[in-house]
Image (cartoon, rainbow, N blue to C red):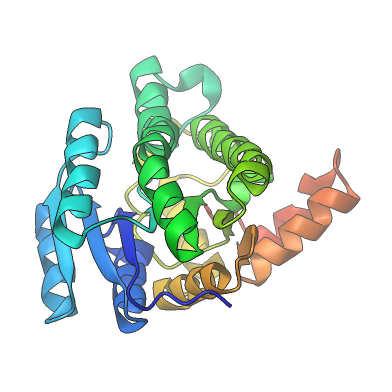
Length: 278
């Protein structure tokens, strides 16, 4: 077991949902947390909830790589180093690929994948140094069940989350050789009761799939895990130095079904998933 006591962990998307729950859970484990979110009000509320726990925060869009760099460097300056980063910020759009404007597709990729790449690049030298000196460090990237399966109207989200999965698996294979004290974790949440699906931009409807209202209702039904429960699973995975974390019974089910039926998994998943996102 690796201890988080006295560690410094950076978390993006910390203004709500899983990110906020991670900040609180990590702080209770004794970690100092550096937080980021585009939503300044949500981020301020997370900081307020942390009370006297050691925290730094910055409100910015993770696609602003200069701001991302200042945030990482600020965390190192504030706390004397960086032991880990959790790349959690994300968004979605709903549209068939043919109807999804390029700017919307690119925005999803920029937030969900490019910012993860940059976060890893910026954090890794600091995490490596601390892990070499103290024995543990973490790179944690939040993918999705949609990084294990494809779903109609989710081409941009699927592309970004499969990309996160591939990046994280490759980093794990590299760092287990060069830096075995750095644990690289890919996280696949199932349906989580957060605002990701509710805030997804609805661009176009595809026949045979739920409309915006029905999709939101089905997601509410399918979302089986709270942000607090999800954060606890992630933090436990960090302590146990897992390389893959599945969150929720739906994620575990989808993992099994996509392995057993790599071509026809949607026939089996459809009834169980109920149209829910992530």
